[in-house]
Amino acid sequence: MPNDVKAILSVITLLVGIAIAYWESSIGKGHLFWLVIGLSIFAVIAMWVFPEAQATKKDLAQKRGK
Image (tube, rainbow, N blue to C red; front, side, top):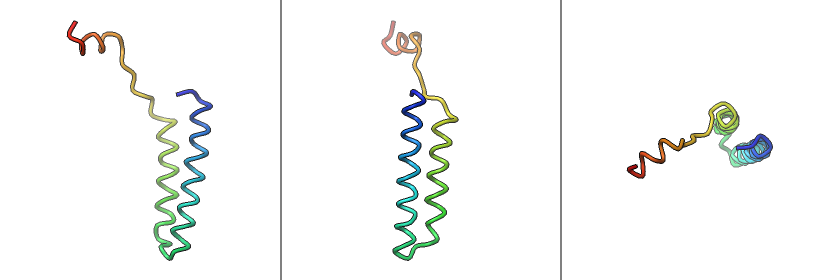
C-alpha cells in the first residue's frame, strides 16, 4: 500500500477512534474510552509495521498446478 494511502487511512482510523471513544464516554461507559483509544493506536501501528502479504509468481504457479 502506498505511504500516502496509509497516512490518510491512519488519520481516518484515529479520528473515528477518538469519536467513538468520546461517544462511549458520553453514554456513561467511560471505562471503554481508553480501550477504544488503545485499539485505534494499535491498528495504526500495526498497519505501518507489518508488511502486506504478497504472492510470488512461484506461489501462483504452484496454486494453479503447473
